[in-house]
Image 1 (cartoon, one colour):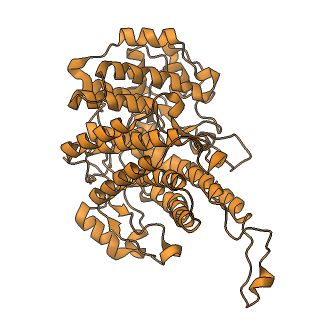
Image 2 (image 1 turned 135 degrees about the vertical axis):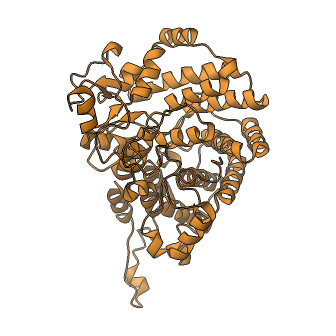
Length: 496
C-alpha cells in the first residue's frame, strides 16, 4: 500500500532538471506541488497502514498479549512473550517513514499556502493520533524533531520524554478543537474519514483529549481530571456516526485494502483466545457469532465456538490433547470482520461512553455512570454494523444483554474497562494501552518456556534495532532516561 500511495502522489508531480533553464522546464499548466488535500488522503491511509505492522505489532504481539487472539504458531511471539525485535519495532518502522513524514510536510505546506486554520487543525489532530500510538507503544520517541530530514536536515532526531510529548499533544488537541467550527473544511471529500465535517473533527479532538487525559491517571491524577473536564466540556463524540475510522475497499490489490484483512488473507493460524470467548459465552454476548466462527466448518453457533488457550505451541497442544489440529476452535469470522474492505477503527463512541462512565465514577464528571456504561455497551454492539448487514445485532438482543448483565456500581471500574477491552477487539493498540492504564481486564499471564519477561505480560514494544547504530547518542539517552530497551520496561504514564 505504501508504494502504491507514493506512486499515486508522484504521478501528480511534474519534476524538472535545473540546468539554468527553469522557464523551459516548468509546465505552467501542471502543479509543482502535490495538493495538500491529496496528501491528507495518503496520510489517513498511512495511519491505517498495511499488512506489515498490522500483522506484527497489532496482531502478533498486542492481540495475543491482550488475549483476544491465541495460536500455536511459533512466530506469534506475543502469545508466548518471546522477543522478535523486528516485529516489536514494526509500527515505528512504518509510521515514521510515511504517516509522520507526510503530516509534518503537510503542516509546512499549509503554512506556506496560507491555508485556513481549520485545515491545519485537522492535520494537527491526525498528527496527535499518529504520535499517540507511537509513544504509547514505545515511550520516549522522536517527536519534536521527527519527520524533518528533508524539511530541516535533521537525520538523527532526539527522543523526547513521554511526559513532554503528552503535554504537547494535549495542547495541540485543545488548540485544534478551538480552531474548528461548523460546516465543511477545505479538505472536503479528500478527507476520507469525516469528509471535512468540522463538527466531527472537533468532537474527535475532545474525545482524543479524554483518552490521553485519562492515560495520566497513574502519574498525575489531578491533571487527568483537569483534561477530562476540559474534554467533556468541549464536547465529545455523540453517537456511532462520530466513529473515527478509515473506510477501505477490497481492491485493486495494494490500494486502500484493510491491513488486518490482508493478514487474514495470508495467515490461517490465529484463533480466538479462550479468555475472550469465555467472557462472551459466560454473558451470552450476541457479538460472539459475529466476531467468531469455528475454523473447521465455519459454524457460528455459540455452542460450537471454543476459545484456544494462550501460550501453547504445537507440541504442548499435542501433549495436552493428543492432536495438533486446531480446526475445532473459533477463529475471527472471515465472512464478516476480516475482509479487505473492513473499516480500520481508531476510536469509537462506545469507548468514549465508557470513559465518561469512568470519569463519573472517579470524579463525578460526565453524567450518570450507569447510563454511560449502558450507552457504551449498546454502541459497542451496534457499531458492528460497520461490517455490513451480517454484523447487525437486534435491539432486543442488546436490551436482553444489558438486563442480564447490569451495571455493577461496586465493581464499576473493572466492569467498565473490561467492556472497553471487548469493544476494542482488533484495535489492539488501544486495548494494550487501556489495560496498562487500568489493569483491567484481569488477565492470567502465560509462562511459556524461554519467554523474556519472567512470565509477565509485556509493558511496551522495543525500538528499531537500527537506531542503536544509526542514531546511537539519542537512542542511548532515551534508554538511560526511560530504562532498558526491553519488553518489560514501563513507559512514563504506566508507573508501577
